[in-house]
Image (cartoon, rainbow, N blue to C red; front, side):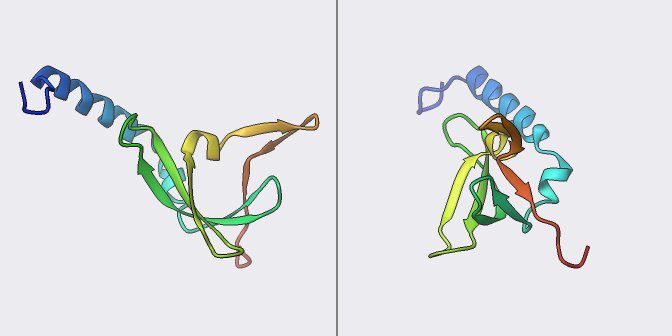
Length: 102
């Protein structure tokens, strides 16, 4: 047993879980880093990258407001990329904005 109280088998299970979560991150999502998104309420954000929640190992989207003080925000990646329903309409929570050069 390690000093932290985690057994070697528990540590192996944690590493296995972390590896499987890392595989869920797609090349497509990684390719979106640096791109601009519009939140369904209208504000614009730039996807800065991804992080892991230290407790759950859940993939977290890290994004910056392109208004106001340019605050840095985080949200579960699953939620960032999900489709939502508001007022009977289905839409993406964050819609990718096309580059002007595309």
